[in-house]
Image (cartoon, rainbow, N blue to C red; front, side, top):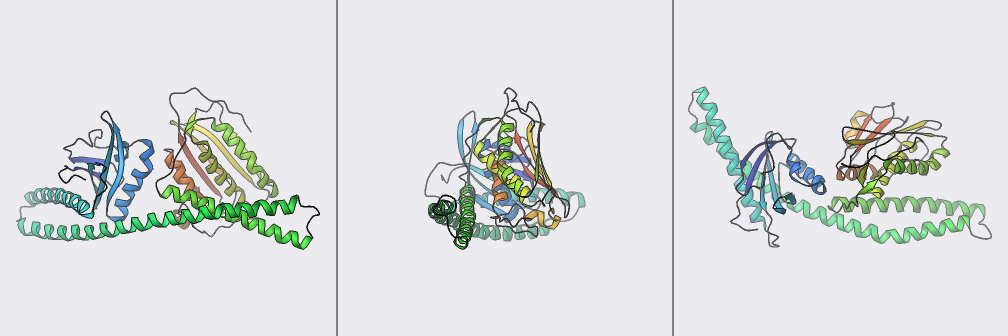
Length: 408
């Protein structure tokens, strides 16, 4: 990074809504206005990472060296972002990323110092304004404020150093986890295929006791293979490698196909899948494989957690420039105290599948990131004993002709 680069600084509220552009010598924030969300600066492919950046500032008080890019009339602009939280305000600094590979911590510290200087200047102005109204000597109070602010900057600098170390360790962890999962996938696949062959095609058939053992082996290997696939997906997403092959898709047909696929599992529990699709849905541009993964997880979970002879309702509708998919079950529901943990990886809640099915604990975390990567939102409405309703939205692809959908 060029040490002579000028930093642009914007002040936002805790939700990332711009309050003021403090300094912008390179016009990096020229496309933003007060009242607009900071994430609007970035294209859809960068939306998830931009949201994670804001969350990192809110959670850790400061963060640095986030690489994002904007699209403007000048073309593709790679940016290097850092941020500090001060009370109810977020200060975000940006410089053009020159692509150099010799960035060091001192560069990050310089950015923080510049941001801190801006923060001190703003605090001084606010303090002096208050002092003029209250008519008291502000010098001693300003000294106290500056001293406390310097202590805060030092703490933020140390926190930033620790955050950088944690980010490096987290990346290493995800890489090692992905390598291990990748190496396990093939042998687990072989075990699953061979056990299926021994149970279904082997002549003469296995004795009953041996067949039971092979069946247990097949069930265990299928679960482990699903876990490995989820770990690979989650590692890729956490590593910023969520790649979406988006194309115009008839979402109605995609949902119908997935409902039929899950009907086999539902039939084992005499559970009815009730599907209602709004006619003439507007088209959406999505990665069909990824959205099918979301559908399979939500519908499959609804069947798993529903009692026998219950109903799972799937509704597909449109409105407000989005298509909405809702999956509602009649299961035990999710207590309010546990709902914040639901989309965290490897989470185990008090609710259990009603048929002894297993869960990897990663499915919903992956689903939320896939939906957010498409610019949509995945939400939950539930209460203990009242079932669970999952809803996700997908932005409508405009302009486009309406797609046909059948009731099923």
